[in-house]
Amino acid sequence: KNEVEQSPQNLTAQEGEFITINCSYSVGISALHWLQQHPGGGIVSLFMLSSGKKKHGRLIATINIQEKHSSLHITASHPRDSAVYICAAGGAGGSQGNLIFGKGTKLSVKP
Amino acid sequence: DTGVSQNPRHKITKRGQNVTFRCDPISEHNRLYWYRQTLGQGPEFLTYFQNEAQLEKSRLLSDRFSAERPKGSFSTLEIQRTEQGDSAMYLCASSTRTGEETQYFGPGTRLLVL
Image (cartoon, rainbow over all chains, first blue to last red; front, side, top):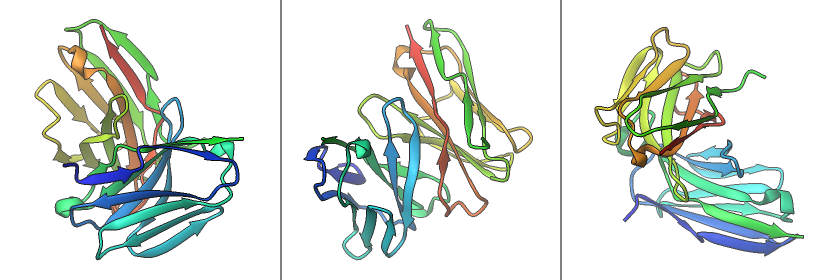
């Protein structure tokens, strides 16, 4: 079993829909990262959070430390949101730098 | 642009050859990370540096792999006697000293071993 699990693996939505991507982790962490990867490989960091909720534009990330679960929400989705979204656990096992990544959720938003 | 840069962006090599990749982090970032990503998978941690010190290495980093960051600025990742299983995207990221901050990723070097 992977230490960081994401669901769903693939997600297709219509433009304008509200999207939720889930991430569960089985290790103790210091922070949970959400990343966006576009075709061609470029990775952009979206959020890093250790508690509560963060919002940036149409993106919202939440984390429940007790339940070891985080969600990434996209409101009013747009085709340009199409990408792979990856969650990663930081500071797992006392590591100072190691990120443990989920396999990613491939999102496709249709116009 | 002062983001993380990686060179080369693509590398095709024959099995058994040595390859070296370079990463230039954001200038004020003390921490530098190397990750490997195979098709359809999330990235996997390889190693990281704080300044010139290599502080952590994954079990994935076999004896054929070596990474350096001699002056605490750019880093190189060398793979000796490449194998087809080494084909992957090699990603570099950097962050500030604390390591608890956002990691900024480079565009990656895509390696294909024939």
